Image (cartoon, rainbow, N blue to C red):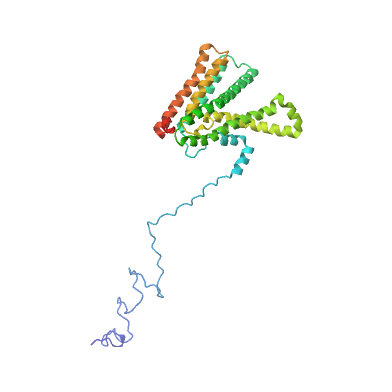
Length: 322
């Protein structure tokens, strides 16, 4: 007869009795260790428990790469010091538009560069074809002539600038006049800068000012020479930027540069006709060359105005508030 006394399985059972082991394959009662391969693991904190690695979340977001800090804008003093050391940087700061939100169409800028390059190639070809350049002295003479034409362009632009800008501001309505007048200060500053650089060159090289150079002595002459070299780099680069950006009149409004450029180029063509430029070139070729520049620039200005209207919604009527 079997029973549970003494913790056994039965007094009469040959495998029972107090202190007897359970049959093979039979788990003991109250055993804290599960059989091998148990799907439920072990109880945490038990002396026989094995560490279970945590399950990784397969959809955890990847860590974001570190974001570099924004570049620190140099202070005003550092910009001025850099401009003193580098005249080309000073010219960029002086003659390139910098108004916030200004429209800069890369297609228009690319076409302007191509027009400038092709115009220079056509001018060189014209000079070589009609034997204007046959020796080193001729090269120097042609270079001086081209530099004089550049200075003439700047002077004509200086005279044309207040007329065209003044008419544009006067035609504006409402509060736009005050806005355009305030913006025109940067363009006026560019005009004053190019005139001042021209005056510095005259201070160093004009024979009328030889007495002043002698009066300041050797240190003064050295200072004037350094200032003259700085002004030459500033002026030469500034002339190119002034002709491309039309004395940064984009800071006033985007439609002003094409209008001013069209007026300027026809004035230059009229000046070439009056002064009899390129006398060694036959009349027919000279007429084509003189008229080619204003026709090309006028077409470019029209195309730029068209792009401003179609792609950026900018028109002369809206600019004037009409």
